[in-house]
Length: 456
Image: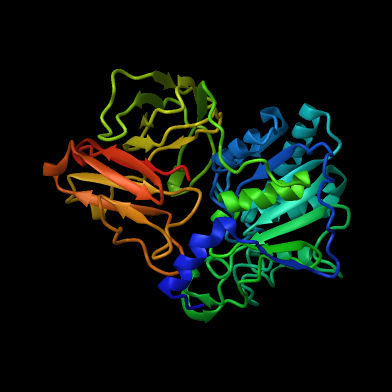
């Protein structure tokens, strides 16, 4: 799909106010919650290699619309990365059955906690696979609504090889879910949210999965399901169709049966933060806890990134990997100084937290490698809840568009800047849209990396 700068910018500029393109198939179950009815408890399900913290802003928006914090839960899969072959065990990776089992347990826990007969499930990407698997295999009575955001329901590719890949549309797993007259399970209301051509995992050409010029066998319509309500959210990318404010509106409306009263996050006067420290054993991202990590939190100056006084919180993780709680104010930009065993000391700079959260998870930056050997300082700009799109977005790192962010379909969620030792101690501004984070440069010679982690 070829998009001009004008097309992309017009699409992005009008997106918050646009009406979504709607497709409702012949077998669609259009039964969102009746207006005025109690909103069911909501369980959020993250995607491949991700963690529950990605749902933090969505949960804040839900709270700002009156959904009680204790009626929401976000699952944190132990090993979030899929196996290459679903039938062959791989260290620190999960099968479809592993995910089904963990999700079923989380559903039971949320029902127990709230006393509700049924819950609503909201999944990003691979999380939708687990949702469909649970519902198809005996869970329909427990689930009132299923919202699948950017889920590759017909595969990232559809070929006759790799039959045991979870992401093969012609593979055993997805054929099992998609077989029958309807692709959804009767008794649960289904909604899919997808991009109009900007999802890197719903492309006809294989360039984004390492096979440029090779047909994938899937299209931009791959996330849609026969029998579901299918919405198209313009130029949002693979992650944004779950975590963008535009996606929140559709998620809330489908589950609650009414428009949200507000999209903006309402700040709390007093904010408590806590979370989990995780790691990457063998280079694989997991959600397993890391013991013996120290977390020091500093209030920083919004213009310089310099620390304002001593640490406002210090923790050392135990076997459960938990840190906190830390008491902060909703107007404070923060630096999280994380020292994990056998990992670089990571200085994570964050925008102010408007509300409390217990899913402020921390993971050390990747090890310094050969590409960093001549750098005096390394800073990474990270966007966990979306990708950087050029020319769709304003993306600036130290006043320039990052050289390692590719234009066109958004595929990059991180950008790296390497600077000489003479620059150490100065600040670096990372800007995405209206979000602006000021970080400081730290010496790579001390095995330190700075990360400007975007919230939005």
